[in-house]
Image (cartoon, rainbow, N blue to C red; front, top):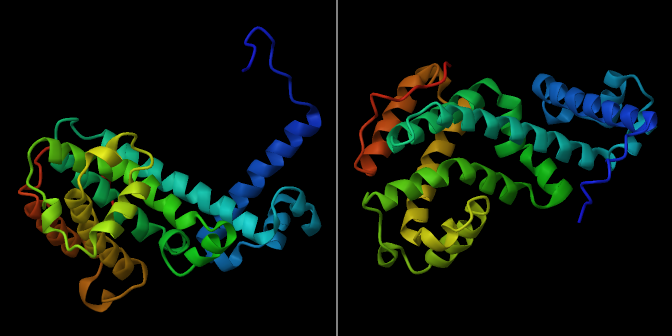
Length: 255
């Protein structure tokens, strides 16, 4: 236990310089990801950005896998903060608005951050997964921290969800395992939220992820342009499946 009567040690000049260079390196890696995708995030490229020799980067990262894990974590932090700000703008008692706003913010962010989407959720995600082995579950429970409280509030308010008996027996254990990861950042929710609610969350995510892939990889762009109309149609359908309508109080982020 820390003794609060003892002043914390002041970082040395060397420690301050090291911390500053590490911040600069992570920021440079984030810029390279945005501009060139994961393939552009290399030890040599980041070293060039911060003005040090390539081998010097190994003092800060465990090779390129460690660098990719760092930029993955920073990008995910950015996305979750963006979604949380969108939810915070909604009335606390309006779950339809909160669900709509969070989903729309995810859609807008992924549309304007395609290289970042690829690292978090697309083909380049394998780089980060290979680096740490835990990136995908980490993404799931971080995203769950944004969406699960809204689904839990809808369930507590009496919105009808499938009962556990309505879930296919072979699927129930998998949903239970998914629930454990999904609710990691929501203490107490794992025990509270039934498997039927988790099933609804998975159905919701299947549809949203499908649209995000269409947007990020220019699928059907010859017909659907910016996909706004498709998003609106999907959102109305998802809300209707919960017995809800789009809230007139929702405040959406600008595309």
